[in-house]
Image (cartoon, rainbow, N blue to C red; front, side, top):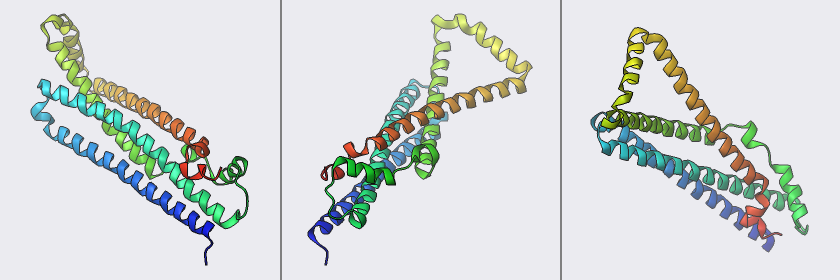
Length: 223
């Protein structure tokens, strides 16, 4: 028969697992909502690409995407916290009965279970995040293209028409090198965008992992 202490620990680990499922569910809802919204925009792009409504809507989609990227990172931080909660409580149940849990003891237990997950392992969480970044980059690319088109159509900026004509003339004379240069430029900017946002995500999650003992409300009760 379980003692009261073990029953309480099992309730805590159950709560941690429920929190983990709820966090992952909310994070997945952000993915689905943004993909549906982006899919709607890409489907309707040919019909609304020349309208100002298209620019405003794509600006909205892009801003929402950047906001969702930040929220997804925060959900991934809490994912790490709840996973470590479960590991910590399992260690406490199976090997640390009767020990007075000071912060140093909890730190020793945590040191034994944590790893460099953000630096060495790239699992499903990361690749979902990567796909989200790429979709958001496509939205931003279309937005920049639309703003550029609107810019050159304004009467006050017709003076740049000669510059545009020279680019088009160069493209007509050397289509393959010009296309290759555009593709290289596009994928270089995409790589840089992915690199910066991935570094930002890794730093945020690593900071959460390092400060886990202070952020976990479940483990804070043992101090």
